[in-house]
Image 1 (cartoon, rainbow, N blue to C red):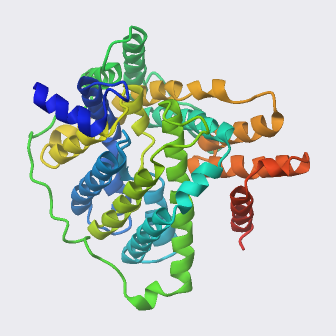
Image 2: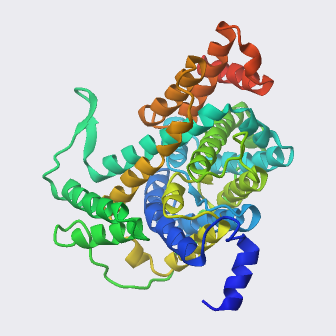
Image 3: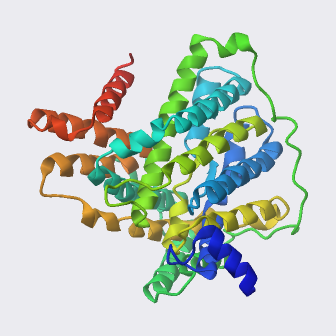
Length: 439
C-alpha cells in the first residue's frame, strides 16, 4: 500500500493515535470476518424456520451486516462488527413466530420500529446515559463474562460440550469424534501461534483448522468458487399494516426486542472496549453515541431488507484480540462481507469446528480486565461476579448485565451505601424487576 493511501488512512482512522498500523488493522478485520462468517450461514437457517425465504436471507444477512459494520467504521471509528444477532434471531423465529403464532412480517415490523426507537433514544443520549450509569467494576466484569460466554460458544459448536437433559444439563462430549478432535488440534495450533506472538495467529489457526478438517470430512470441498447472490425480493419491505402496529400484541413483542437488544448491545460494547483499553478513567466509552447510532441504523435497515435485529457481535473480540483498534478494522471486515456475496461457496466450507479454537482463545483474552475489579469490597465484587457467571449460564449477555446491575443496587441499599448507585440505575433495576414478575 502506497504512502499516499497510508497517509489517508492514518488521517481518517487516527492509526498512530490508537497505536496500530494498516497491516494490523487488515489482519484484525479479516480475522473478525472469518470468525463471524458463520452467522451468514446460520442466520438464514434459523429465520427460514419462521417461513422466510432461505436463499434471500443469505443475501439480506450480508447486506445488513455491511450497512451496520460500515456505519460503525465511518461514524464511530471502532473495530466492532455488526450482524444479525444470534439469540435475537432465535427469539424472532421460535418465540414470536412459531410459539406466539405471529407472522414473520409482524416480527419484522417490530424489529423495524425497534430500530427507529433506538435512533431516537441515541439522539436523546438515553442509551449513552445508561452506559455511563453502569458501575465501572461491572463494566470490567462484562468483558470477563463475555470471555466465558464466547469460549462456551466455541466449545459447544465444536461438540466438546454437549447438552445433557437427563443429567447435569451439559456434559463433556465424545472428544474422540472427528468434530471435537479437529477443534482440539486447532486449539493446540492456535495456542502455539499465540504463545509465540505470531501476528495473525488466530486467523492462521482458523485456516489451519479448516485444512485439518478436510481428511476428517469435517470441511466440505466447494463445488464452485463464485456464485451470484439470490434476490432479496421475497423478504424485503415486508411489513404489516397500521391495524397490527397499534396493538397490545405489538407492544409486548416490541418491548422484548428493545430490552434484549439494548442491554445485549451495551454489554458487548463495554466488554470488548474494556478488553481493548478503550474505556476512559471513569469507565465510559468515548464516542459511544455514534457507535450506538451505527447499531440502530443497522437494525432499521436490516428490517427493511428482511432480517432480525442487527447488533454488535461478541465475535468482534477476535479482531480486537488480533490488535484491531480503529474503524479500519471494521472497514476491512465490510469489504470481505461484500466479497462474500460472490464467494459464498468458499465461505461456507469453513466449519464451526475451525472457528471454535479462535473463540476459545479469545475467551481467554477477554478475561484480563478481571484484574481491575475490586474484589475486596463485596458490594462491588458480588455484582461483578454475578455479571460474569450469569452470561454463560443464562446464555445471554443482557441477562448477565441485568443480574449485575440489580444486585449492585440492592447490596448498596441494604449496606447503607445507596448513594453510590446512580438514579438511572435505580430506575433500570425497578424496570427489570417489574419485567421478571410479569408486570
